[in-house]
Image (cartoon, rainbow, N blue to C red):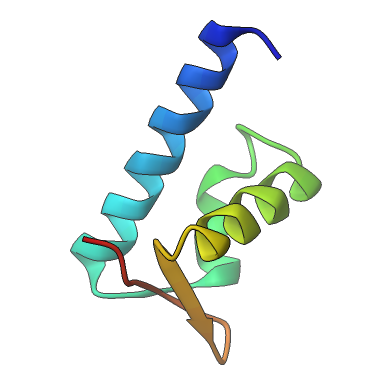
Length: 69
């Protein structure tokens, strides 16, 4: 992955985390429905798992909530 692509991915992840924060939580499937034209399901799943590992978000009963600072 090129540096420019990595930067775009990080910025996209930040925007997704902000959207989750600003809404107070969003069902995982609903969020995917909003971004499915921008990425594949596997890419989406990888992004969500990465954000969980970074402790930006958590998922309980398919509800994504923001946990970062």
